[in-house]
Length: 410
Image (cartoon, rainbow, N blue to C red; front, side, top):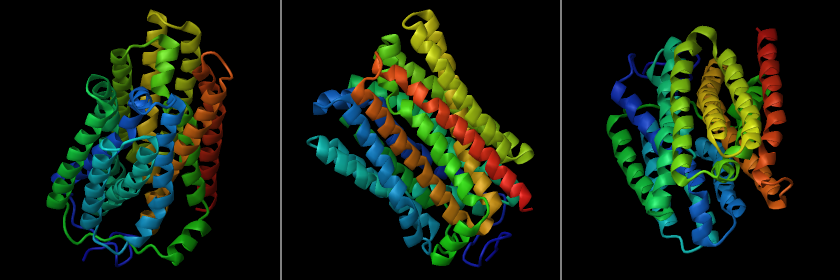
């Protein structure tokens, strides 16, 4: 057994270089999990019509899905911490697929809501454990680029899964999209089981690990950055299809194109972040990524002012580029930041960080739904960027504060 620096004897790694096929299987699994989480946002209108509910109510299904992942993530990570990573990752994908089969067959709104919560429990383990597994496969100096590579699956979900889900929901039905995600989940499970090496274990997550995490001078501050900036994002992003329609009078095809633009930007931004993260450090990349997302919301204010037409579409493309470039690079570099701060606590901190992403999505979707329900402005989505802007400013301040705390304790 070979242990990396800072690992306990239970954290087993394998010799570098990591098998490319193993990393590809983890990235593909993240693509499936990301598609399952993000595609629903693109289907908001068709789900609302099919289930005879408002878009705000349909958006709460995505919010509750996020809350399920947020709550169950640390708990399930602790319960499975002694299990071999290959088994945990495979089981997560299989159950995620079963959940999407059940969603495709759901008879109504409340049954779909309950199924999405249970599906969240199934998918909650994969992304943090894929990151932890990737960190076991490489030396410390390659950690940022490797973890960013694995997280590219989530970025690719934004490139393909989100716009394709929106397109399929219109052309076929949202239920057909659920069936496709179910099939991809089972394919990803087979690939992970085949290519991820045997005998990989992370440190045991017990009460002592949680106590150590809470006593760390900066870990919880860093995790809070994730929750805060995700809250700002999902105020608008949870209702992006509605916002495009109200601001631009956008057709389903234009909406799919705009979602694809943000996804391509996210993929490119994540690649760039992985390349420079090892050199300039994750905190610098994260600060820049949040600043880009803040800029996207400023552009959204201009987009609503411009309205339908070439200027409005051009501003929508710019906003999609800025938001996509910042979003996924921030998430992947936050994982690297936490692992670098405390390698021995990575299995705990990365799981908690994933929960923070989904907590932010739940809070953001809830705030956005509240705004849409009360229609403070016309159109109602015009108010959403105003809600998100101060949240991003807070995220920037907390991120800088956390880094100052780290430097003071060195």
